[in-house]
Length: 430
Image (cartoon, rainbow, N blue to C red; front, side):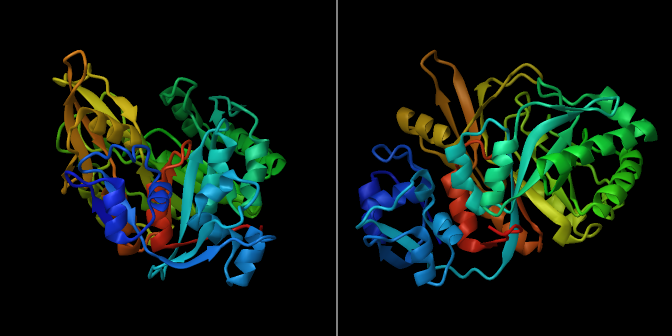
């Protein structure tokens, strides 16, 4: 795999000629939205196909997979655009395999809301082991509030061999953690028992594979209470055959340029959970200091500490695909950033003729620009180099896998990078 960084004067056609890969395949594999106006510093992932196949009359995905000793799911990972179609076109070329040196199988998890576009869901599911559905909120009385009907996406996930996970939190409708609800639940065994009972009913009724539990940022003050609750939940859920995952947002100070990580004894939780997802998602707050969200240097601090107290094979590394656009000058607590995708960041850079720069320590892309009103901005985002640096940590630290927030849009580059480096675990029979 090569990550090509666009240089001044380069075009999609000139890059295609350098690597002898057709333009349309470069665009498809990377999800390029600005092929006619590439930004300097934009990244393009280059992987040479090992085996190509030209579709013949009567071919189906299943027949092609059988003919080449592979699976339909592998073909969808190598050609994700096929998920948008009902038929194959005679004469089109698809990738059977890439030139890779994959040796390791990992688990992957993606978070979604019930209103995800079905086309985006189907395109992403071949890359997933677990689908975590963000749809359930616990109350301080042990009841569970459901936001939307998730029956359809649960079934679609199973059709693709993906294990659906029920996500339960105390996050309110406006996106904030209710500290009062969390405190009430952790303080009352009777409320915990009712919450566990209600969760179990939903797991059985909806056909979930397991539960993903999230509370407010776990701290020195509440970790023992949370461990006691988790022990009660694990005894019941495990007895019924359900998997238990907890999502943890590490405690950090993000309001300064130097992020400080609290070292909490998460081993108290790992003995009851099948997996722990270390998530960066709370870090991506719109009023935070302008910087890379979840810098690799901070990730290494977290993993260096965590793998010494938690079996690494229980750890999922959380990745957020969003970037942020801040106006300048930055005023702490007052300057609000706008969440943007990498594609949006690239388009801003391309339209303004601004080269995208790269911070090696943070492993993140950034640039400054001036809008039409004369306001200055700084944009931090993740590109292919950023994703690759984070994906590589799974192998380096021997983790269970990766968890992506969110899959509400299809991010071609991150899945391309994961696909050519790892085999993806599938837990359910298709």
